Image (cartoon, rainbow, N blue to C red; front, top):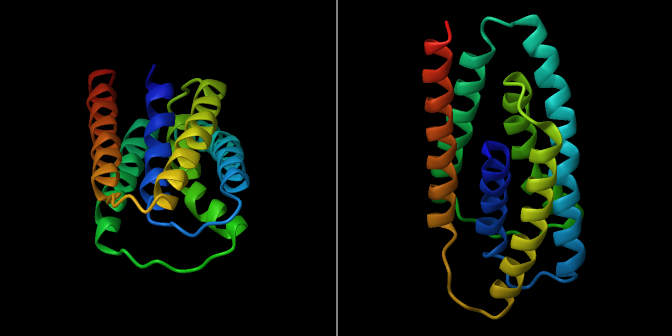
Amino acid sequence: MQEILTGLIVALDVVALYLLLPDVKRRFILSLYTGILHMFFPIIGFTLGRWIMNMLLQWSSLISSILLFFIGLQLILSTKNRQIIAIPISILAVTASLDTFSVSISFGMLNLQKYLFILSAGLCTFVLSYISLQIARSRFTFKGDSIKWLAGISLIVISIYTFINSIDNS
């Protein structure tokens, strides 16, 4: 269940970003590309996370908690930087998807179900990013800050939960 929830949480960051882009052409392609990248980056992240876990078995839960905490904090702090720049859709999709890489490193270190997270992140991102781009196109005024705060706080809560569990299991 944690994998599905986190897949949804990483999709919320894209929603917050894409709600600010009313003039995007080829919204379906951008959403599809972003969803695919939200599945590709975690594969790399899980692999790297498992490799790190084998190297740092005793420290993996602590490191994972720290990574998730700072990713969540970064999401919250990014609400202050609201510049809108014309970016090619391929670069926009890669930029919006990079956070799944670092989250999946943490999940790889925790031995969570890789394919469940990857499927959840990809599908949630595709659907929610397409909806966000459609809403942005309609010129409906919506600030993505609250969604970034929700995603950031959720990742921080997961990091604290993971840290507490690692202390209890020690």
